Amino acid sequence: MRRELRSDLANSENENARTGLMRFDSIVLIVTEVAPNAFLVNVEVQNELRSYLWFAGRVYACIGRLLDSQKDDRSGYSGYQYQCLKPVLAIWILPHEDETYIVDFPGQTSLDVGKHTRSGKAMKQALDGYIQFHVVGLGPDWMDHEEEAIQCLGHIFRCDDDKEKQLAYLEEGIPMTVKAEKVLNEYSEDQFKWFHRSEKEKYDRMKAEMHAKLSDRDAKLKDMEYEMERIRKENEMLKALAEKAGQNSNLSVAENKDEFPEEYGKKQKQLTGKP
Image (cartoon, rainbow, N blue to C red):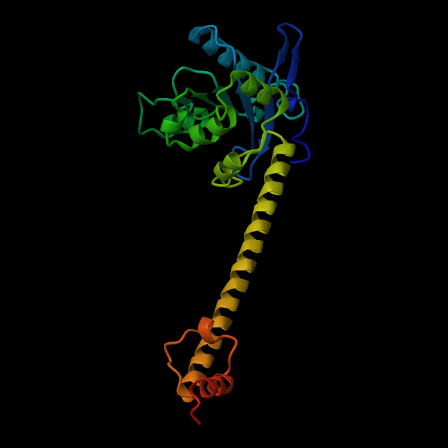
């Protein structure tokens, strides 16, 4: 089944004879081991917002195209085999909003009559979740929110206050920084999906360099600890020798470090003239 589920559905340039060409930022066909067996994920970054009503129409138009384009596609359905239609999950990111918010549409239906009927429950279960979308608006206050999605997307799209740089990020790719690496490191592979392979490679390279630096630091700390322990033992040995020779045990190693007890005693005799 995995070999069969690959075709034009994930093509970001969707052509329709009646409605023309529609370009998508990213479309991914996800295959899972549990029902539903596959679904489409559409990720869009919307910089232009003429009005919220205009945006709502664009969201539903894109979802409609993703459903309609499955007709007679080898990864979609043909004829009357509507059971092969793939569910659609759309994620819309608005990086330049005045305020921060998340709007979720989980695609849940309401069973108003016959709540305890078997057929009613079966119908609701079949309809639920077929179309889902999430709209994430990122405003200047995004850092005030602890929501994981806000934090992750905020560091990608709002980490720089310069709007020209933000737009360049969207066109040329997101540069990996230490700050971004720290945030992304908090997300497991299951939670975070890379937008481009090059960013994953940058992340892995930075992570490897960080681990190498930490390993080098740990090795140097161990060497320092070993040297300190060696000096401590030497200090204890010299103090013990000094006590046996009748010297003041309070003398530090620094004061006697170049003298053994025998040599120190000879010098004392020479200074005092006593045997």
